[in-house]
Image 1 (tube, chains in turn green, yellow):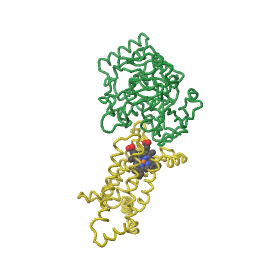
Image 2 (cartoon, chains in turn yellow, purple):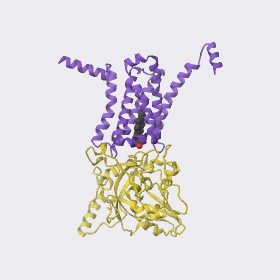
Image 3 (spheres, protein in one colour):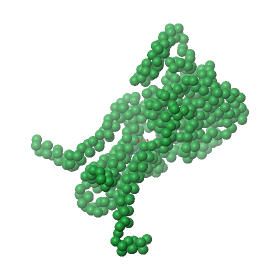
Image 4 (cartoon, protein in one colour):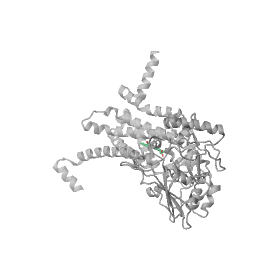
Length: 319
Length: 222
Ligand code: HEM
């Protein structure tokens, strides 16, 4: 079993020594018995075992260091390196998710209960940010559909809305005079998009639990949409019959739409969406500075799977 | 031997000027550009080194523009007089703007002319940045002794274009951020303050105590 960490952070710096030592024992024991570490959640030292998925890409993966140091997570600040600097203050256990709206099982769920016994999968997805850069990230998660089914949506439910945690004491971007967005951060999907097998709730990446700056303990990943749709640190899931007002649409409706499907033909007023820069500056040589842009693909290259969701829709109007 | 040294010193005098302080300003002023480029090719600029380099060069261009604009108010308000170094600072602003533009053209866009043109006409923040740069070109070209002598009073009016460059640079910065972080607003406030100071000084000279007859004429003309 391989447990990857940024090379400059020793495990002992993150985890109390005793736990860290126990982890060694545990892994040793598990290996000896040939048992996988089958704990999907719980103690901080649990590595995640996940089944491979045919949905994964075999493109080169963005180094862990870049995935965890270059983040848009405005609850922790607006600079790309703010989340990595500030998110360590976030406590993610216990973690409750309020499920409400048009479902038969509304409740405040403990995250562990909500995802219990759903098999973890590794999904290596491209992620395309609306700002014109992209990464390839090995997520660990479960299909959102399997969680939604547990909540038993009613037939009138058409959309799913999500909210991020609001906790100014642990999220410095939610304090002070200059706050980037109104909180909570809200995102949403049409129910068929939410039930699509590509849509996952991720709880880890690179075989370990999600780092806080990447949206711990649980976030959405919708690989054919711009990154901001993949809402982080989710505390609420509501099923509704009307289209939720998503945060970026509220902030600037001319620039950001509800669908926000990756589309090279619909350019954003600030960024052409025709091409993208693959992040991976630390991979070596002059690659970072002199890397060529890649052409951006419609639906981020997932058109075969998802284009039919939008049959007959004008994607320029519904951007 | 001696001749070679003499030639070398002549070259450096033409390039850097003869005043040692001014030379030091050029050399120190170029340190950030060299550092960022060096760090970039050595993978020390994080996950997206190109963007960090591009932004750093733009930010230094704006900083030198603000510094250049601050020199006169500083002196008027009783501070030190750096007027001898204003040209060096202005030229540094231009060099950084040129490096910033070059980074965008070559490293960011890979000289894809169609994409660049589309950016310039369709993306207002690029349009405004380009305006700032174009305005700086005639100023940089005429920032030398012979031009100053040749242009005389017109030189001063020409160089007032720097107000437009600074305002456009600050606006460009505000337009390219997605939300309202503090930094671009601080630069915009600085530029606005400096422009206001100049305008106030100009207005005071133009409209304040004037001989009665002249004031009469101004009034009837308005
Ligand atoms: C006097 C001229 C200019 C000044 C003072 C200036 C200033 C700036 C500043 C302050 C930034 C942001 C730095 C930061 O975020 O820390 C920036 C970014 C940028 N500028 Fe300029 N700029 C100028 C001209 C131009 C021109 C001519 C272009 C292109 C044609 C351009 C393209 C860009 C781009 C692409 C970015 C980065 C945007 C992003 O990261 O999304 N700028 N500039």
